Image (cartoon, rainbow, N blue to C red; front, side, top):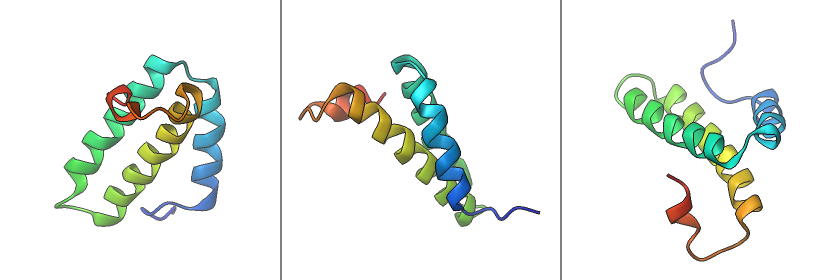
Length: 77
C-alpha cells in the first residue's frame, strides 16, 4: 500500500505529465489540487500535503512557460 504523503516517484511522474499539458490544463490541475488540499485539511494532513506538493509541481511548469513575470500569481487560476 502506498503512503498518503508524497514520494520521489510522485514528483517525477508529475513533472513528466506537466510537460505534456497545455496552459489551460495546467491551470485546471493547479486549481483542482488546491481544492483537494483544502478538502483534506481537517481529515488527512499527509494527503493535504500531497496535493499541495502536486499543485506546486504543476505551478513550477506553468511559471517556467510563462516566464518569471511579476504578475505570475494572476495566471495561476
